[in-house]
Image (cartoon, rainbow, N blue to C red; front, side, top):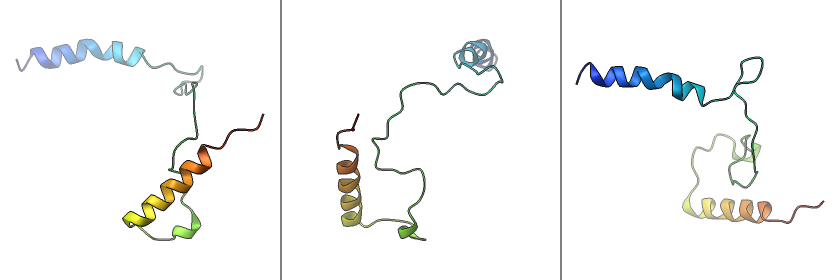
Length: 76
């Protein structure tokens, strides 16, 4: 078993690596469908400062506000 498991892993590595598409310059291809429907922003809001955690009430308020903001209909 000590030989078989690593051998199987080594044999399947090229298949897993081939599943990822690359750009002509070698970076991962990130094309696809991306949405902004998440309460997590990419940048930390300045108002949070050094605060590490929300209280349960703060978390509910934050998620509720974020969900309302993301559920607005988009204007064409």
